[in-house]
Image 1 (cartoon, rainbow, N blue to C red):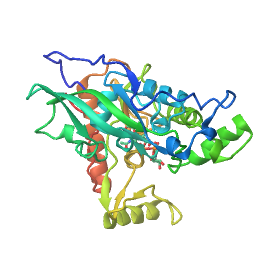
Image 2: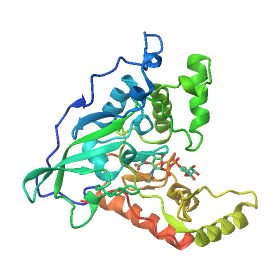
Image 3: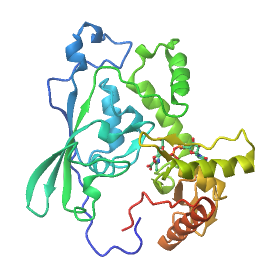
Image 4: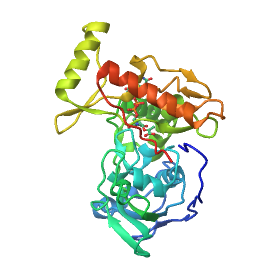
Length: 321
Ligand code: EPU
């Protein structure tokens, strides 16, 4: 989010290649009508990761489309996320139960301080929820990602646990193949369902400017969640369920979208800016001519009302430049 005119130069990576590193590409096994020899290959070959090197300037969804076409599993749930491969490795983009860190093998960069090319293993990247080593204040801006090596899989690895994804995929699968058998799922089928869900909920980037989710989902201690839940039940009835995800460390992640909706912000406009009516975690440049202060004004007012109502501090996911 540009908060003012930017007095500098913006470099945009055009490093634009996708290359399988270990072995030659297998025949496309995502096309059920073609002669597919998956089952003839040994388990060892199918289960070993396929390392794919992708330039930082490749549009992330072009990579997802390529992987699906190649019958490679791993990034299908990340389909249709706007942005490019270099940024994905900085932000640890995530959607529908998958984060890009789950499939990153190594990140290659140019170090602008030592003026040399370097690489980081996935462990060294220090990934967390929408977070990485590259975002630390003392590191930020030092490394320019040149390419990322992903570890994909020829072995089917559907991740369908998020929300109603399993049901949506099962419906689509049945329509297409007349079978609900998970074994015959393909990355392309999952990709299609993900794209449909995203299109239903999120603004089309080429039509309505936004940065996707404006805020991160907050993580709160269990006691705080129980208080929020008790207040919601008192207001909406004892059967009411507050959406949440229990984390392994005993903390609870609450969808910021729910809190923002509860505070009455869904669909609200402020000058050229608006809260998206189908997913209030997204602030859009509604008129295409919104001033930065209109977006930031909405951001501040949403943070303040969530703080007042729930005692929870929202933090933007969007970088302010
Ligand atoms: N919800 C509402 N009202 C709404 C919309 C959602 O109450 O209008 C509640 C519902 O309970 C719903 C829950 O929020 O079940 C979660 O909604 P959704 O599945 O849309 O996911 P999210 O938590 O709002 C996160 C990511 C998205 C990602 C989706 C799907 C963050 C900050 N955002 O959103 O990522 O696509 O999950 O995995 O974690 C992005 O980062 O730019 C982004 C779009």
